[in-house]
Structures are given as C-alpha cells and as structure tokens.
Image (cartoon, rainbow, N blue to C red; front, side):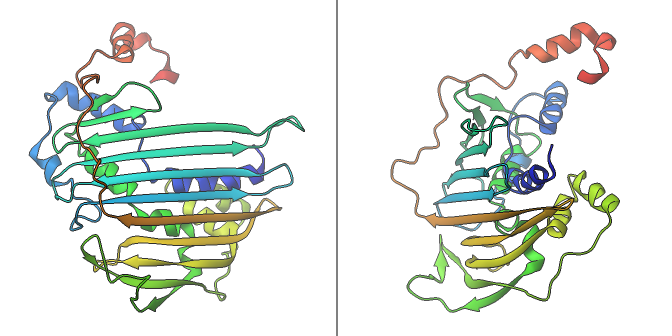
Length: 314
C-alpha cells in the first residue's frame, strides 16, 4: 500500500468509524449473549436508547460527507450519505440508512476508477432491532448489549464526524441567531459558531517509529492524522446544544497530507441538516426477516470442528 493511500485510508477511518455495521466485534458479543440469555429486548437497553439529541422532538437528520485526496496516481474519494429518523420519544423508535461509496484509481493506466458501494439500514421500533446490509435479508439483532443505543449514538456523533482529528487546528467564534441561524432546532435551544483556522498550531514533529505506532493503533489514528494532514483553509459553521454537542452544521477542510515524504492535496466536507419528520416516515418492521435466534452456519462450523478449527478462524 502506498504512503499516500495510507493517508487517505486514515481519514476514511475517521468517517467510517462513526457508523456501525452488523459485523465486527459486536457479533461475537451478541453470540455469547444469545447463548447465555433468551433473545429479547431488555428494559436496560430501552432506557439507554436516548443517545445523542435525546431531548429533541421528532426529526430527521441528513448527513452528506465527502473526503477526497488527489495524489499523482489519481483521485481517491469516499462519499457518505446518511439519514436518521427519530420519533421524538427517549425510548422510542428510529430508522437509519447509511450509504458509502469508495472510488480508487485503477492500477492499470487508462482504466476507469474502481468503485465500491455499500449500504447499511436499521429499524428499531422501541423493542426489536432489525438490520440490512445492501439488498440482503433483514436480520433481527439482539438488544441486550445496548446495540440500538450504540448504533444511534455512533450515527449521530457529529463531533467525531465534523471535527475528527482537526479540532486542534480550529477556533470557534460565536455567531448571533438570525433567520438563517435559528435559535431552536428540533425543539432544542442551540448556539451558533463559525469555524476559523488557528494559524499558530503546527503539526507535532514525530519520528517515523512514533508515527507508525499511532497509525497502526485504532485508538490513536486521529493523532496520526493530526500529525500528517495539515489544514490550510477551513470554512463552516455549526450549532451546539446546551451540553455543547454538535446538532447540525457544515465544515470544509482543505490542506496537504504528508506521509513518508509524499505530499497530496486533500479536501474533507461535511454538511448536516435537521428537519421535521416527513409524513410518510415509518418505523414498522419488515414482515420478512430472519429471527435473532436463527440457525447460524458459522456457529455450526465452530461446533462441529471444535479444537480442529484453524487458528486463523479463531
């Protein structure tokens, strides 16, 4: 993998990490919970469903994000389109759809770029959670580990999505409310702030070993991005609620990514809008769906092979 592509993927990580898919570590936890307890929604999980914007009225949130880097080998781009609809009750329902589109230059000169698309949808009716990957089947998910709340919180983590690793480079200037900057959004009082670039901040000089350690750590990747991606221009504004959490806004960051001596311009754009829930919004679960306690092929394979399962699959 080229250094420039590593830089692009580091930024991709910041945006992708904000959405949770049906796969990953939570799947292992879910299997353990299914074996230990019956599949049903717990009161504890329902109590935690409020997540971000817990005091907001019924609303929809639309998020559009683009991340582009332009090395000599060709443009690399990640685009995210996300919609979250909530019924306005702390323990109530939500519906979400998260679309991703990756574009990478072909390794063969003259060929069209490689494009990969993905979509993850979720519906929670207050008791049952179902999820769908692309056009696959709807699948019930266990809620005992608080998965609905975690999904919703990750999807609405605007601080992570809008600011990411660039927060140290930004300075916020409060703006008065007016016709285009409402003082109340989805029933929440908000304050508006404009983004400014802090010119006194410089990337921290780190040796190659330290940079590699940050880059290879899931938790520390934002620090690696801050040390290797230098914003040259920022523009945007955000609205924050009484707790200081971002509710909506837009931000554009333009700069240069420098990784192992290779430079490439990058642009990161995010726009978040909040509006009333549309009349046709529905939180009804699909009739055709796989139950949470369905037979699972991989679990059967593990049970049959036992200790003979190759280490790589463990």
